[in-house]
Length: 184
Image 1: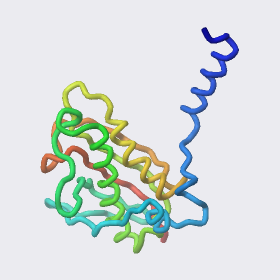
Image 2 (image 1 turned 120 degrees about the vertical axis):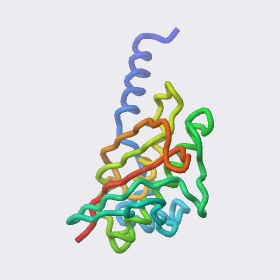
Image 3 (image 1 turned 60 degrees about the vertical axis):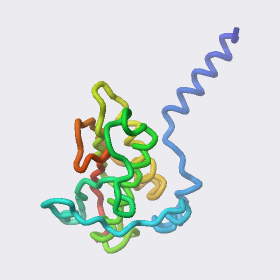
């Protein structure tokens, strides 16, 4: 049995760990650019994906760029298909969300004139092809959100929606859209 004083400390420590913002010091040093952080993470941006239907990859208005929904294409193939969690695990869907972000950042970099001209990630929308009763879409969306924070530091913290869907284009498990502010 744990004495009452130690139990309070244990509860307070757990509460503090849940309420503190995540740390990304190993990635997001103040003097590193987003391009440098990608290298530290061992990642490279793919070529910007081409639209798969009748839409444009992004729309710019002023300093805001809206990026159309990105699917988890890697080397021209979807890396995750089917419903989560029956066909694609939560972990695999989170990894797919990371790939969606990389694809979206490639589009953003084209729109901005380079990755380092992206000033702030404002909003992320994550759509998850979900089995009936599945309610852990935020865990999948964390794959996207955490990568953006690792690359952009505080400028990568954003508003977000994590939405369950019955189906997504081409049978993808995840789709991610972005809204960002770019330097003028």
